[in-house]
Image (cartoon, rainbow, N blue to C red; front, side):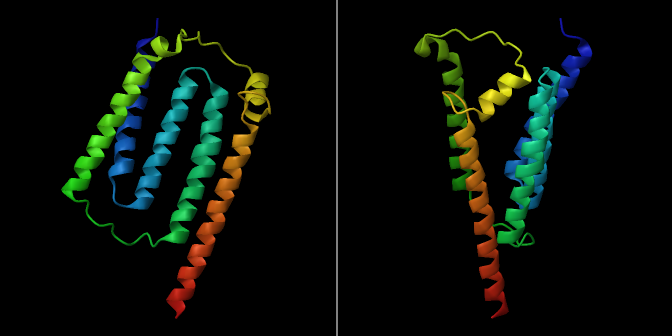
Length: 177
C-alpha cells in the first residue's frame, strides 16, 4: 500500500502538470509559454522518479527540459520579436479549439478503453528495465529499436536551427534597409 505522503506528492505533481500545461497553451506571451512548458517537463520527470525510473527521469531533464526547451527559446528569439503582442483569438476560434480538444480527449479515452478488444492483447505487467535494455532499445538498429528515428529527429532539429538563423538574418537585413 502506498504511503499517504507519496499519494499527496503524486497529486501535487499531477496538479502542477495540469496547471502549467493549461498556462502554457493559454498565455499570449511565447517566452512565458516556454517557461511553463519547462515546468511541465520537470514535473513529468518527477513522475518518472516517483515510479522508480531514475534513468528516464534524468533523460527527461537532460534531453527535454535541458536541450529541446533551450532550442525552442533560441528559435523563438531568432525568428520573432518577443515584445510584440499576439492578436486576440476570436470566439469562433476558441470554440473550434475547445471542440478539437474534447474530440482528442474522447478519441484517446476510447482508444484506452477498447485497446484489449481490438488488439486481442492483455496489458503487459510492468517490469523494471535495466540500463543495457534501455540503451539497446534506444540506440539499436533492429526491430522496435530507435536509432534511425533518433538520428532523423537530430537532423530535423539541426534544420530548424539553420532555418531560424536564415530567417533571423533575413529580418535583420530588412531592418537595416
